[in-house]
Amino acid sequence: MVRNPQVFLFDEPLSNLDAQLRMELRAEIKSLHQRFKTTMVYVTHDQVEAMTLADQIVVMRDGVIVQQGSPLEIYDRPVNTFVARFIGSPPMNLLEGKLEMRDAQPGVVCGESWLPLPDEWHAAALRQGNRSVILGVRPHNFFLSDEGIEGVVRVVEVTGESSLLHLDWNGFPLHVQLTGRIMTKSEESLRLNIDPRYLHLFDQASGTRL
Image 1 (cartoon, helix red, strand yellow):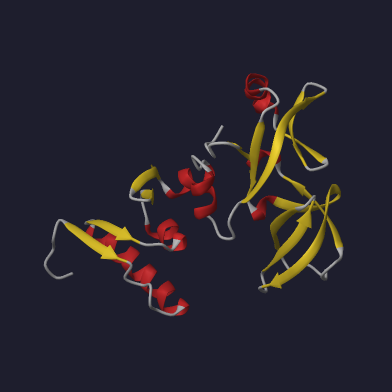
Image 2 (cartoon, rainbow, N blue to C red):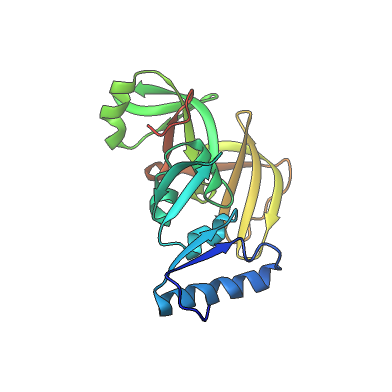
């Protein structure tokens, strides 16, 4: 990095390092970029590196650009199910369902449950009709609730500051990340609810965002 070029190209420079060293070098690379202001093209399969280092992310599949934007733009509004699963750790839950209006309220039927959508979906739901969709929910957008959906816990992973739960809900495998240490065991039932502001809808046939 002593030649002061116009562009730096990094091709997965941290892929063979241990987790602690990767974290330290990510911070060092970002610090160097902020100091020198030189354009850096950084190739990686690690979405954490992409989210933490990039000003702009280009998501590619089979050599074709699928989506380009800032890290949070791509995280908050993935254009299809491929990007939705690729960006985010743990990955987004994708549940097959069907749009359905009940008492003038838009919602999605998943298995035996009807999940309401925010009011701003009302016009879009009327246009789409009762079509098949894929409902996307990030693992950290669930919260414990006495009146929520009921799932059966299969596996619990406690990392200290959070708990990752793998559940079976209406026949769907569900991954849920909750803050803190959740005292539950395998085969126990757990009730959860979803913050409707962070739901994502995709066309079931094409996987494209609605």
